[in-house]
Image (tube, rainbow, N blue to C red; front, side, top):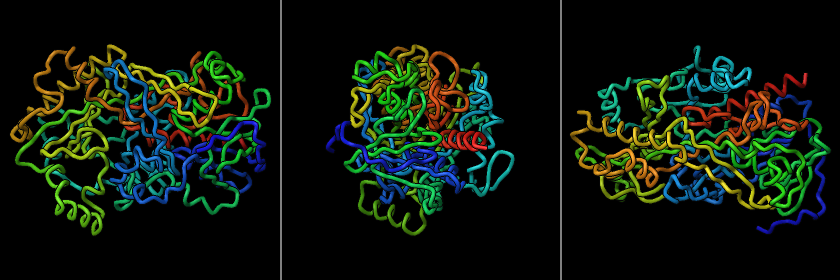
Length: 543
């Protein structure tokens, strides 16, 4: 793509009341809520293109979307000492619906304690009782509404449409190891083992674009532009005046009467703030950007969930590996989905989950399992030729903190993403404990008779030091970056508890970057909740 020069005269597309940057999980929801008032005008910008792509509709299509320039930004992390010098692919949705169009579809709120912690950090109205109504507001739960779930909302939540004996046996082994069974991970305490609920509708992926944006596209007061890459927030002093962006090989300028709301995620939001002169002065100046506002926390506090991929070879129980390589197996898989919208093509990346404590002294579970009836060398590569399952386990509340920093004043240049995985000694200790816990589960009678070999990390690796080092070799991200524009009032905070950027009038952030600490589980639906809260803040302030 030819990068346009900043001196190119900008085409003024006229003022809007609200400009939303990023049509991902949060942006689509926010556009729906704000444009519901016909008296306000809303502009929604998305750097990617439409989601009329078959692999964003079929659940297993995530395999063809991550790493695909049609749908993914194609980021990579910086090499990490904790990963023994490895860098990781870092998929982020570049398409209408954002990450909700390419992710694992798991519906997860986290734990009540996560939000109580946010409140204790000084963020009023962010405790569990405060956020629960916003989870329920958008929810359409398959079992109907009750005190914990909503019904009739846009965000469809369903049970998975498949079953595997190997997963049932892992579940039974967890119970034998003292982990309780659980039917619903989303009632505030997610301790236990059970099957994930997913954002699907009748076997199709249900993204934020389909749920929130599609019903609103016909509104005359909502303008949606794809292929629109934000270049910088336009400021008059410390007040937002509009947004400059690239749109299909031209520079455009949109004026803003009320607010610019950043929904570009934990990578895109700090990048745009920094490009606009908002951030740490030394970083901005080193990239030739004039400092408009000193806000050192921008791009700091990056947190993510790193999963340790343990793989076990099995016998006398089927896994996807057993027939995915065969023509007859592929035909069967295709027919099962075509006829019933079930089977492997309806699969989320992980089907069975468990939330457990690495230490009995923990108040709430700090480990999450994603269990899959398959194994492969690396994400996106063909399945192994042998029969095996994967039990990936991640530290839900890592101590390690990373950064997102621009590398150039060019908005098309990819930022430097350094999660600093396993840099904290506490995280290395938890990694060793997690592998030992997995081994204990696998030793239980319901599963032990089927397991023939610990393929990863390998049964010969025993000491804490060896296990932590091996974790660096076999761990990968599960794509939950948060925290880079954190909410709070300390020296590193970027937004207030109303999600307003400190020191800048007319600028708000509503995405996963505002989380002061990462939630204890998959982060997509908490991001949607943040958007619902933001919409409520904005609406209340308008009246």
